[in-house]
Length: 305
Image (tube, rainbow, N blue to C red; front, side, top):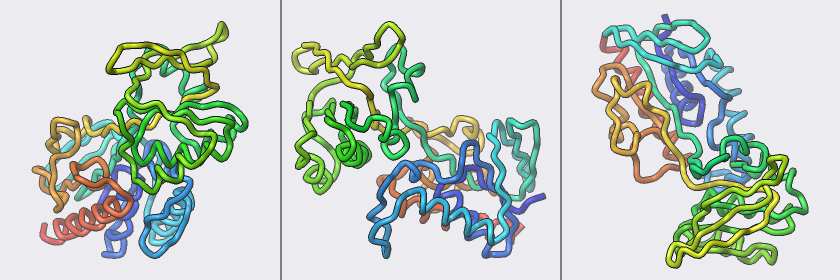
């Protein structure tokens, strides 16, 4: 029996583990992919208080080392179901194991939103990418498109502009929504051009199935245009993965946990943290803040039962 099982190994989950461990609780972190979450896709993190610049990978690795040194158990396994037995929460994972804990912190984060186009899934990793720091080198000296106009899209495009011969920004709105400073940095690059008010409506491939470009459609006129490119990066938002826990914690209309700043749910002993929770601001700082709040709430729950 573990005191607290943390589901998710991103910044919120690992911070929850850290705070619980420092309060004398035993903690198991279950992560289905690899610890770090979305922050590992950020080549530069420049808004962490007290640190001028770091990579997302550097941050994630340091946090993982920190919780391991404090005594955390970290297992790679996907949680498929949770059973609430009152004072005991039974967690089922895809490796066939069951684990029990007195309390849970769910910090499942989010996944990348897809364009929803025919042939898209087959092209992921084979022409379609989500992470410039991971895949940008493959497109050195080539032309890429970037679908999206928020902070993530702008940050990814800045990195790509330093490697690629041309970066073409494709935004469905008539303006970009990311920070003005990021826009200034990106649009000052001579190899960046922009198309606003267009939607990517088709993925074009050659006879071997390799991506050769995209078709965009102007939202106002319906006019279509083929744009040749060697790769397409997609940064159009994120989707929570909370469905397996819907009986434990209410979801809002967008699938996020319908919990407030106390990170509590309707199930005693179950708390939520990070980007998977409804909130106005989703940043690294707010994720780790949630992790601390949820962990301390879980510790209080255990101590009072």
